[in-house]
Image (cartoon, rainbow, N blue to C red; front, side, top):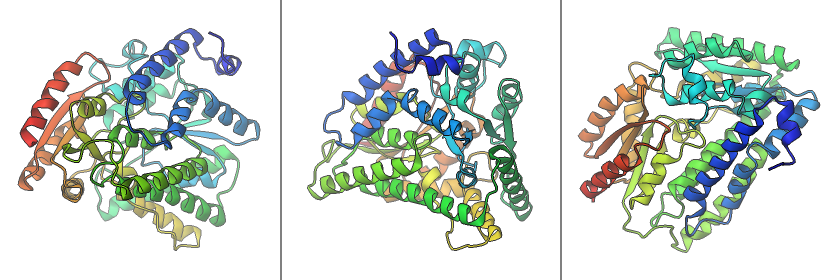
Length: 424
């Protein structure tokens, strides 16, 4: 069926037939998982609209920005300092993909035992399915795992790629390496954008990034009420959309949603009965449209009230210090803030273990579900120590490894239901 965006998608060299199939699947999947929920906040209508226009209106906005001379920078990781992109008057969008479509094309050049996230973003590019990727003037990768690191070498043959080196430890020498990488990234963004990053622009960009983090922190605080006033699925969606929506508009809309949420909390209204088991997710990020596990958990009689992941608290927990005025002071603040991220790529990673236990206690959850994508070695291996740390704190944990397919849904549902019976 023709759409108002067909000409735009054709100019972006998308495979129109395959892309239409993707949007149909995405629409049905979204309807089944999200629109069937009862008692949703009115403010979620904005998120529904964003998803309905994810490859339409937002891509049109990116093309208009490019027509004005602005550059579009795509990123795969929360380690990339978005503030530097914004300070160069460029647009920053997240590119991680959470769907199996494109898998066959990816497996022609990648080993089959590669994690689903990597196969997804490579497959989206090879299959010409993602207008975000096709809109990018630069794609920024990072060395958080060997699979992504080597996949970027292949991706570089199809799109302009820049890779940031992420330290694997957090000693003094590692901080110096990271500081050098942040400086190198600043220079590359200035080169691509054709604009100098001034201290004044960077200060404003830092404030903008912090405003978005603060509104998401407020959301996370409000959702902890009993009874739970918003589903975990809806909060996950909000966090996912934060990676590619306009940051000013997004912050304003989520602020309005939080106002509505606050009224619901004061009235004692919830989306589930007060005795519903409260669970926390931990582990790998869940990119759009990877909603499988949260749907299974919440349709099994539990509610998710926290996510310890890159699409969750790991991305918003820490703010950038806004007190600096000089370029040097602000770069130091960026270095410090981003190095506090507790990705599983680090060794040792006691910081993450402490954060998980602390978060689980603060949220008073009945249990934690640790999620890792198949073949994601950092998170799958670290699940052992996470389990030990939670066990010592008296908090049950279920460890799950899966991918983007629907083949294991019934098996996962059985395991989740058994876990819920135990924690009850």
